[in-house]
Amino acid sequence: MAISRHLTRLSSLVINRYVILITILLTYTGILQNYGGLPSFSGAWRFEIPLILYLYFYLNTILRPTRWQPLLAAAPLVLIYVGFDIYFILFGRLPHITEVTELPEMFEVLPVAIDILVVLIVASPMALIVASIDYKKTRALLLGALPLTAIVANIEVAPESFMEAFKETQLEIIFYSDAHSTRNVGRLGMMLYNEARRKSYLQKIAAYRDNARYREQFNSAADSVKAQKDKRNVHLIVLESFLDPSLIKGAQFTPSPVDPGFDKLFHNKSGFSIAPVFAGGTAQSEFEVLCGVPALRELSGIEFNVFTGTKTYCLPHLLSQGGYQTTVTNSFVPDFYNSTNAYAGIGFDKIYFPQEYAVARDTYFSNGDVTDEMYIFDGVLLSQNLAYISKQIKEQKDTPIFNYILSIYGHTPHGINTDKRPKVITVDSSLKDEQLTNSINQFHYRTKAIAEYINALIQVDPKSLIILVSDHLPALTYGPNSYKELQYLDGGEEAIHMNRIYIIEDGVATQYNTIHHYDIPRIVLNYITKGEYCQGHACTFKTTPDSINTATYRDEYMTIMAEAMGGCEPPPPQTGSDHDEDDTPAQPNPQPGA
Image (cartoon, rainbow, N blue to C red; front, side, top):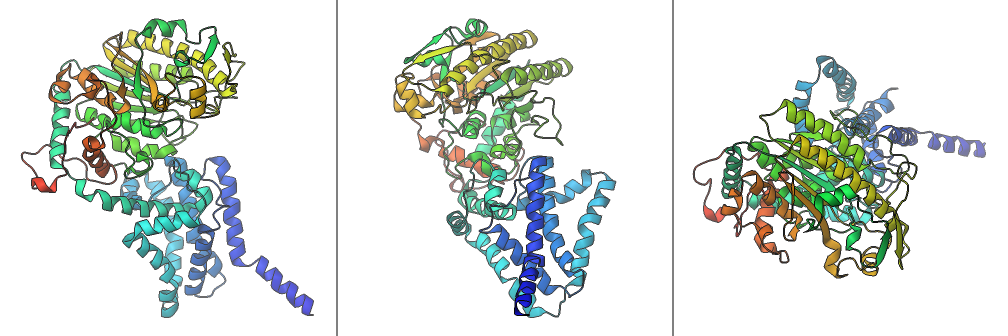
């Protein structure tokens, strides 16, 4: 009898409602991750699973005991998880708490049938739960809510302490992707962490918000662009890990890796641009290329990660204000580095991702066959962009275009489909590195595809600016040591930040002095305004660059980030200032929109 009682007790423990709920969620998330949903939360046992169990216990405690009590208590938790995945599938990112305010607008644009369906699925069980609460259990209601109240209060009052405790006690937070982080810390955990991070950053940037002086300079630059006659198009292509083998002294390549068509376009006219990162952190290079300030990491390890979608003072927004159609083509996933929010905040009118990664989004291109390569080949990406842009130019003759492309081919581990692209370049070096061999062979095929794209683009759009720049160098197998061994440039510590940049103005290759990535917006603005921009602003790309003077750019950087992280949309131009000079952060060298 005693054994029977123990077995009965063990059986009830194994199959009780709490175990069943966690099993259901683990099974659900494990399956849906294979169909475009967020990763399984199987590793989130330090915070997420205990939080789910606590919330389920609390709901079971305050609901009236009925046969439906376990299902009613589980309903909001299951709905939250389903909602996370639907949101991720539709928008390619993890929802943030602040996005609750966007729900009314979402209901306005959705078809009525969808609105009704959402109400039935979500509102009906929630109404039943509210009706089933035993409001006489005052003590249980109040005491049971204390842990959740404490978490919320900690985030509101002391967000940095919450973040610190969270990082100390949880598995790793993947800095470049909220989606990947959910595997370690869970959906709710990541959403709470993001809210604490937002609160922490907002405290730091409050003094820089609504900077009247900077706003006026930004609007003035936008007006200057708008006033131009015969506005010329701009094509800016950021190339993933584009390593030029001609800069490597410690290796010989047979035959020459560069495609003859590419060499003919840029022979002796290639330049250098200093990247803020090495071997990773593409979003940091993008931030500099598009916003015109150094990626100082004052508010986040990756600036893009804290963008909310609110418009800020970056080049695409300025060009959009100046009458341009601004388009971004990103060849990777929408969630990567929070790029969807970042691109919206930077000011792009149209944001495109491959249809394989953004099923519910409007797009014009797809990955094609990526067998053995993982990432879309530059030729496949650029040929689709050429078709799209050619159509835009033809159909919208009176609307200038800013065409921004981010490639991904060339990313570690440099996969190459040898059936399509045989390894025709041999590498002779004391450093035996298969990644180097693959990267150089990729360079060969990439330069051929790029040359074909540019030659065709010049035919379609001869009076335009075309800029190609590498985001950063690839790590290869041994990181910086590989570049020392290979004698890349002078082999110095700064050499690994030196990347190739290629510029074509009105169909002719043009070479500038060595610049930083954050100088590119000024080159664009100066070209568009036919030299007017640099007459009124300090354009550092016209001189040999020195090391970054943080004091020169910090206020500009903080102002851009203040708006990006939730500041108000820059209002129309005004006469005078909104407040006293002492209330506006100092601007030693303001260069709006760049």
